[in-house]
Length: 204
Image: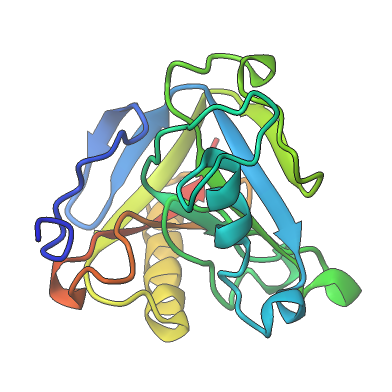
């Protein structure tokens, strides 16, 4: 019942709030290990979140873990998705899965990411995926401008949040250094008013 009402009971990434402003926060995130999968949504009947099942199978969220140990890995939040560099104006995905797409002819491809639990400090410490589409890699310390919002993270809502955040960051003198991420913290069955989403833009 708690998850339906938006309770986040899983591990979330560690970060320090560097500055809190009226309309956004500046955060510094600690290094982490991520599992990611890159795919064309047509492989999943056009579903942009299709990679979720691949990553969920790797950690064992849907049954036996699809890794070589095999070892069940705790689910974390959020799931993060990235938009292509070329269409960063369009939209990012949601959740603790990260999706990013390539440019032009690869613009349909998406990358979705799960952040692995903090106990995995290096990529080689994480269980090796059975599915070769799953890539394990490390991300170093990174700084983001972040805005939080509830409801369903539709393309229109995300686009509006991204544009406003970009304007705010540029107004305040921050240099944007990459495409935005959409972070979704709740499973699909969480009621929209209780959902937690964030748009994150990397800055210098």
